[in-house]
Amino acid sequence: MAKKVKVSELVNQFGLEVVSGEQGLKRAITVDDLYRPGLEMAGYFEYHPPERVQILGKTELAFFEMLPEKERRDRMERLCSSEETPCIIVTRSWNVPEELIEISSEKQIPVLRSSMATTILSSRITSFLERKLAPTATIHGVLVDVYGVGMLITGSSGIGKSETALELVKRGHRLIADDAVEIRQTSDNQLHGSAPELIRHLLEIRGVGIINVMTLFGAGAIRNNKRITLVVRLEAWQQEKQYDRLGLDEETTRIIDTDVPLATIPVRPGRNLAVIIEVAAMNFRLKRMGYNAALQFTTKLTETIAEDIDDLD
Image 1 (cartoon, rainbow, N blue to C red):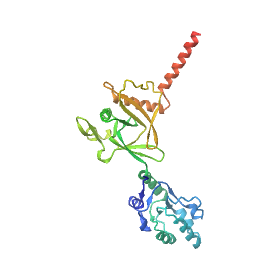
Image 2 (cartoon, helix red, strand yellow):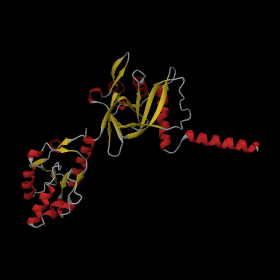
Image 3 (cartoon, rainbow, N blue to C red):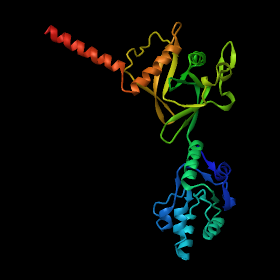
Image 4 (tube, rainbow, N blue to C red):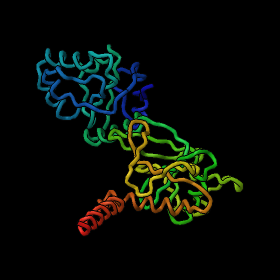
């Protein structure tokens, strides 16, 4: 189900003045894009997006005041003609045209006013709507910041995710979420994870119980959110399964609508998972910087084999 934000939430968040159309404060905002109807004030409505929040700034209103009375009414009637329009916001405490007040009251489209500059208000509203309307998901796992890499550790219950996270925290890395990770996908398909408010900064260790990481290790051991760039899946070692030993196979997993690099680490007694995950984080950073150890190894191996064949000939 698509997310929605009521116009009343916008009013409360930014302290907007309701000038007219109070009956429409329950209208829903469904997109995070805003629109400044400059061409519409000149009479061009061919590609007008009515589903967006409409922003009238100094430029639009100064031009509007230059129009003849008949055209002024026509422009506002067409601007308020769609049932999709959530609201119209006037910035810089500019006087709201009488035509807009009258027509918006008839159509029950809220007209709001702010003292902020147009660009500043637009930027803040866009950020607010992006956060509110972004697709979200909750995943069972642990999110940690290891050497600046947001690593989502997943695996079956009891595999050792929380214990690994505790060891990473002891080694100087930071915990974002344990057990449940709330993930938000931004408009540019980046994934950002955080912890639910109820379990923020908490870690559950079987046999010990719930511990507060910030209380035990200090504020430097936690952070509230982090972009997810790598997923580490822990699974019980399977003798018959062939695991990637070189690192040439690059797997991905899909979270919401975004593909994220995936590393599968088999778990068995004697393996230090915290160290392996640290190395995975450092190796991931090196790959992003253009250095791939596995690729260089296979290239050198191929060259060596080719030289040996030439010597035999």
